[in-house]
Length: 243
Image (cartoon, rainbow, N blue to C red):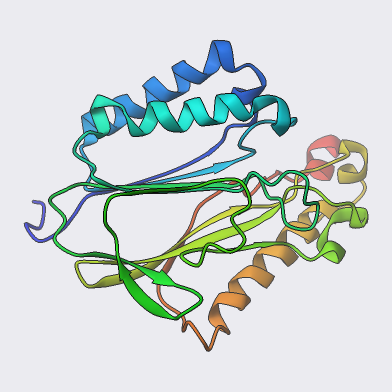
C-alpha cells in the first residue's frame, strides 16, 4: 500500500547520441515513448538525465535540440508540471568544459514546497515557473558541472565526459541528482589485453574521483544522492575472448 505522504518519482537516463544522428526518424519516436511513460506512471517529479545531447556533431544538430526541448515542455502530458528546470551544456567550442550533458526536471503543480540549492551563494532558492539554461552554462549557479581532469582520460585525449549535479529540497527532503558520463572503450583490441582494461580503470578512477568530491565538499556539505547516467559498463572482454 502506497504511503499517502510519499511522492512518486521518475528517474530516467538516456544516451541520445544516436537519436540526434538520425533526428528526422528517431526524435519523435523517442519523445512519444518517454511521454507515454509519463502518462502511464503520473510521477510527481521527473528527472531526465541525457548524455551526448546533439550527437557527434552538435553544431549540425542545434535546431533539433531546441525542437526536442520545445516538444517536451509544451506537450500535453507535461501540462500539469508547472515548474521546469533545463540545463543543456551546448558550448561545443570549449574543449575544456563541454560535456554534452543535459539535465531536465519537471515538478507537478501539487508539490507544496520545492527549492534548489545555489552552489555559489550556498542558499536555497524557491523553484517557480520555467527556466531553460542552454549554451554556455558555466555561470549558472543552480548546478555544479565539471569535466573530468585530462589525465583521467585514456591516452589523455579529450572527450565529452564529466558530470552535472543539482540539489533539491522537496517538501523538506534534501537530495542531489547527478548525471554522469564515463569513458567508453575506444579500442576493443586494447580492451582485450587485460582485465580490468585500461578503459575500465579510467572509468573507476573518474567515478571514485566524482564521489569523493561530493563527500569531501565541506562548503555545500554531503547529502544523499542519486547517480544515474551513462556508466559505459562493459563485461570482461578479455575473458569473453578467451572463452
